[in-house]
Image 1 (cartoon, rainbow, N blue to C red):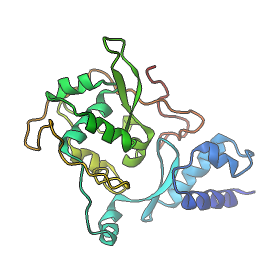
Image 2 (cartoon, rainbow, N blue to C red):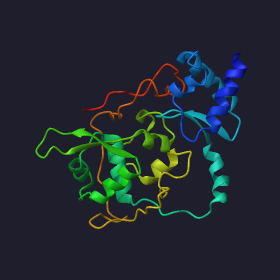
Image 3 (cartoon, one colour):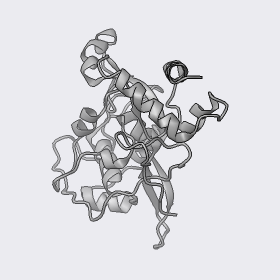
Length: 245
């Protein structure tokens, strides 16, 4: 099989896939006769082939996929003009703290926000697949440590946490996450129809936001090196694989 035919096979599989495809699955297309380095080279060539189109090939945390470019969203939204309910500011602040300070406990989040974090908000983010408990802190009560997931990165169109925008000491807003995503808004309601209005015990949209300055670089959730795609622009690099126990 020559390069042109191999790229055609990859292109077809990725277009027909209903979720990002990791390198391990893509190698199955060629009965494992194509090495990982060669496969990454082919994917890079495909990425360049689609540069001038409305759809792009991107490397995400859980694999490769084709997705619409951000500038196409204005037109695609006309197919679905009705906007579903958005997540509350309290939920998005909680998600931002987990993303930039992970791993964190509910107590850490409450210290930063200055208000109690409802269990409903934590469950809401877990049910959406954006955060998960990855361990427990050795402290009284052994509180759960929360971190973001591959699904969170996929929904933002990112390959790793390193691609989150830097912050200048203030808490990122919900709009910061929305601007990152090339897919339907991260803030919109999920496919299960759950709504995300402010919950009892949470502050409303006019409450002041606590300051947030990361004490150390974010720690990425554990990734499988055999399935994680390379960081765009560097076919040999992979997202961080170490995570707290």
